[in-house]
Amino acid sequence: MGKETGTVLVIDGGGRGSALVDAYSRSPHVKRILAVPGNDLMQLVSEKPVQIFPELKTADTAEILEIIKHNNVDLVDVAQDNAIEAGLVDAVAKKGVPVVGPTKRAGEIEWSKAFARNLGKEIGLPQPEYGIFKMMEGVEYVLEQPDNKSWFIKADGLAEGKAVLPIEEKSQVKSRIRKLLREFPDAAETYLIEDWIGREQEPFEEGEEFSYFVISDGKSFKRLGSAQDQKRLLNNDQGDNTGGMGSSSTPFLVTQEMSATIDREIIEPTLRELKKLGREYKGVLYLGGIYLQNRKKIYVVEFNARWGDPEAQVILPGLKTDLFELSQAVVKKKLKNIDIQTDSKYRKAIAGVSLGYPNDYQGVLGKQIYGLDEAMKMNGIKLYGAGVKKEGNRYYAAGGRLFYVVGEGDTPIDAKERAYSAMARVSVEGNNLHFRTDTGWQDIERFRKMNE
Ligand code: GLY
Image 1 (tube, rainbow, N blue to C red):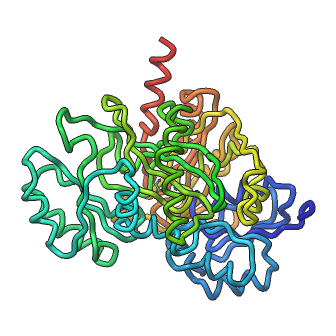
Image 2: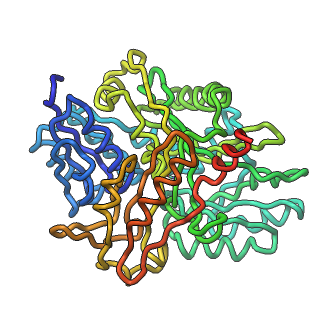
Image 3: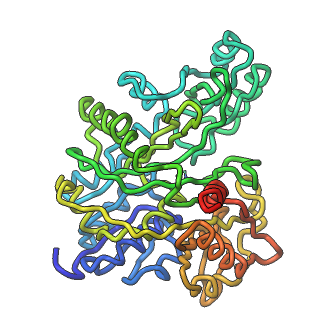
């Protein structure tokens, strides 16, 4: 592919999709970018023209195939889990169009938590004990276990990461199962109950979560980076689970040594097993892991078949390797020839959400958002959109997750200072903006200790 000849289609509409558009637009091979559904802020972070299709959903396979046909698309990047579950990658590949992302069968490692745990058990991955249930079957499983344990109950299917509930003590088991079935009737038709990692044996220990990304072409894989995200709505990890309120990269927790262990003991055997099962994995594989400091042990929390959101927003801006060339190498199974390079900046993303998100933010839709232009012009800041509508020069709330400010710096403190000074410029009419103020506190603390 020559200079400025390629048309790329990104399947995503949120901050992750915006970070992908930004990264593809930096490639000299890319002439224009399409996004389904895309969002109104994508053009503002792209060096190339962006066309969005806001009327479509990421799993509208027939319509997406039409777009590909009429626009001579050279590369499709399927970044969203629903589209992978719907078999979009398979449908695009069948048309002979280069596509990055796992097939439906390979992507089952994300869209069925039961499949992923059974695979992990088969090959001996470090993971919690678990059971798979329907209806109220899980009650007996918990009641038969020791009194001092705790568990998580999670839906088998996709639910934007929200269908996970803690069972801190046995007495809660019935109410938590009922809540999961009531709130996620489809995703939780089958559900898992698994040991709360760190609280399954004494001495109890709270683990620290991290997100770890590799890309595979089916023959080999390469590391993309790691991050830590904050999923709970409120400071101090309180409140509802969300799609992610902030993220930081590269976390000090994930050292080179830990990365080598993860590659050897988790990623490599998982990709090998998928291949053995006839589910060759091509695309980004995301390990959600947890590290227990005292036990010096890494556990698998889950796998996802895509970039994380908001982790992509803090890793992709630092990618120095041409993303178009990288994706082409995956398609052609020539990943071995690619050297993945990143800059050495530390980045922090903060999600700006509508007040009331994730459950009750309808009243915020249509309210004006102030200060986005000012924030995006600041030095060392990227501003990625999600649920924002642009009309003329004005911006309006059009979803629960509105936008992300990403601050970069030489240290976690520099990145934090930048990100929050950009956030200070933004408000939503009627005081309707919410964001966390403590995202990435772990690395701020580690950085302080390292420099004492
Ligand atoms: N940050 C969590 C996820 O993307 O699933």
